[in-house]
Amino acid sequence: MKLFILVFFVFGIYGCSNTNSNIIYFEAGDKIDLSNIDSVRENLNGFWINEVYIDKNYIEWFDFDKNRNTSSWDFIPYNENDYQDKVVPISTCSSIVELLKLNNRVHLNVVGMGGSDTIKIESLNENRLEIGKTIYLRHRGYDFMDD
Image (cartoon, rainbow, N blue to C red; front, side, top):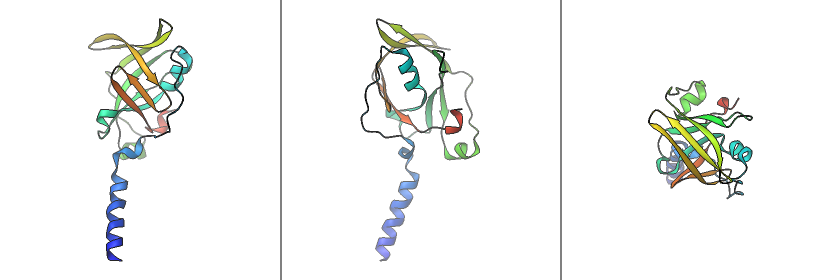
């Protein structure tokens, strides 16, 4: 019985401290039509985390207005204290992203302090975004920032 309690306690602590618990996992959804700028904008909105840096405490946020094709591309810290306090430090040097339709496909035009670039969106569905060779996964983020 003591062994069971010890094993339960150890796995319980591991489960509560797992940084991957904030990633939203879905079964593979339908791919978003990359020629439809409205659909791309709607599905890009929200929080994402770079698959390579999944254990880090930074997430990325797109906040497109439903009638405009521009958003900031913010890299923001994520931790439970910020979530509970509803206070999030945001950098003032974020890049600006504009959705452009080139050759019947939506691209990201990114403008930042280091210059600008137009980037092809390789694939997008409800939970996965691929830009170039970089894969982002949907993150639960901060629901109080969705207003």
